[in-house]
Length: 239
Figure 1 (cartoon, helix red, strand yellow):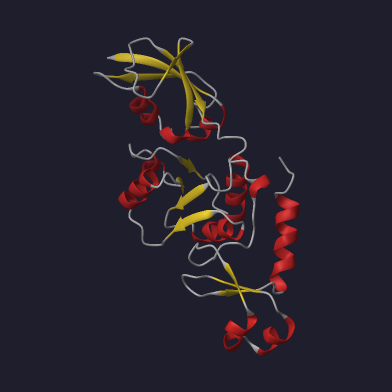
Figure 2: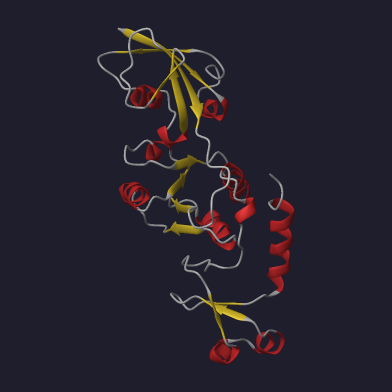
């Protein structure tokens, strides 16, 4: 039986058992094992991992661990200043409310409530989307390169996690995307949608947008000011 010693830093300890957190873990194994395999055997998904060092020397996930190695594992550090265009998410079936919130903030967020795990892994890989889930096993699929395991069950707290992890506050562009189907909205003349509006909406509102895919109509109703205040107080200039 071989053994290697692992030290996990920062939020990677969230994935460890209470008695393992912050401590050196004695990992026993047989045969030829990669760093990825042993790290995930300790329940840490590889997309959550950043730099790895063996006895102070940088290694990658494919490194074949040797008997007696001392391996330090650091959390992945997302880019500090991403552009709005390069931030693209994919959410698993249980995150419908989070998907709606991310779309309200303007982020490209692919979501369906009938995705299979294999589909999610393939889409994430092929479309270079960040996979958001609470399923560690899904994140451990080999082809998943970008992903984050949400810690909270609460959709607002999940939104907080995503915004702060990926430094999204400066690039929030709210009310540009359809909450229902994720397409970018287009302005539309009031006369073109007049027959679809309720009487009070016709009377009090003049600026409208429409989704070119599902034809949902949007305007700055009573909810608009509340959402603007929520976004400004919670995320703008908070980093």
